Image 1: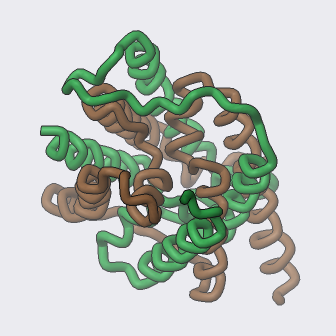
Image 2 (image 1 turned 30 degrees about the horizontal axis):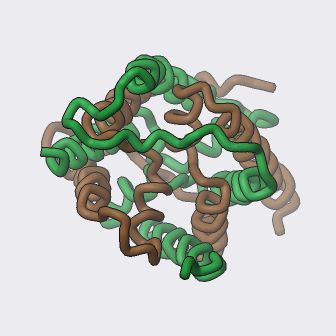
Length: 148
Length: 138
């Protein structure tokens, strides 16, 4: 293992993490809801009609508007998306199906669940971290290295 | 009021994701690339978020209603099952392949990026597939 010091951003990432924690705490303590993005979005497209939806729309609107708010004060950071469109469609389908069956994603299990000391969330987080590590290993060191 | 706080929470969440570097798929993949040049930054994102979140959850567990008098929807502890394991494993494969998880993908969609839009559409498609496979409640 070698550490990529060039791209390591400890302070920005820690500060961003604190903001994410504050946002999740707000939604929990004020609205009584878990800030799990896949759950908020999934509840919006669920067929059950008894789910309240408007708060979900507004939470997601806040996410979507964040880049605009950021751009008013500074320049947005770069995003490098190395996956092509086919890979992004496969990835999106897996993320959509997987987070609904697994009842959560990086925010629901990785942040909220671990904050609540949930065993299920710990297991889920270990699962998606491990399979994510394997997927990146295959993409970066098997497929790209062999030039397929 | 609750609609306003939901919006504010989403906005702060999104700004946090941008600041943290989560909206850059190459950085996310750098975190998962422990066998290559490893960028540990995202460990600090989770650590920072959990330190704050742990206070909120310990407080919430002693509340009957939220501070705005809404019911608290905190998931009851449930058993580990295959759906949790295989769902999370599948999610991880998609996360590593694309470098996006749901939150950052939605935030980056807000910049008008075409690749983020394709990913989000596919993700919503995946969630719809899940709904279609669910047994309907009568």
